Image (cartoon, rainbow, N blue to C red):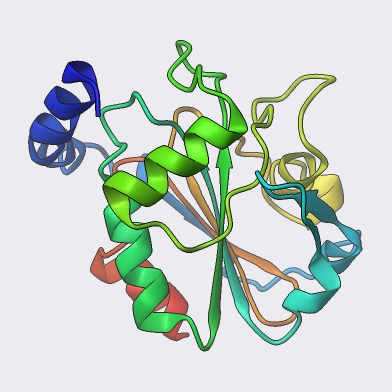
Length: 196
């Protein structure tokens, strides 16, 4: 872990405290009406850092938490919380981490370096997808196109605005929640969304 990464890990609690002052509507969105997506979530796929293809059809019957990640960010310590969440709910929850360099170059490493960093420093066992573009653009990963386009998911147009934004898809492939970086993976609100 670099000096910068150690410092960012140290200031993480302060960063999360600042987030509590933000209005709720900035930190989370919910599919209250349970709008069914026009395009099938289970038709998607992604490739892990080791090259394994994850066909989303195998995710049916489980909740899926998708999060865009970075190794040099003030929120990087959320890797530990995500891993704790994964351990606690692994029988009914799949977590997919999408490393991205789209926010101030905070994920400059290779796929192999990212995987090693996450395993060594945070004990990450949940799948990490190959480094991807998550912001809206012509290169945006198809999974994030689906997550951030209401024409595809039925209601949500919110793309990630920073690292560690979180999306929860239910057991039927319906996008139910969006949470900002300031919502901890272990927050009561996110845990309640998993328990629904």
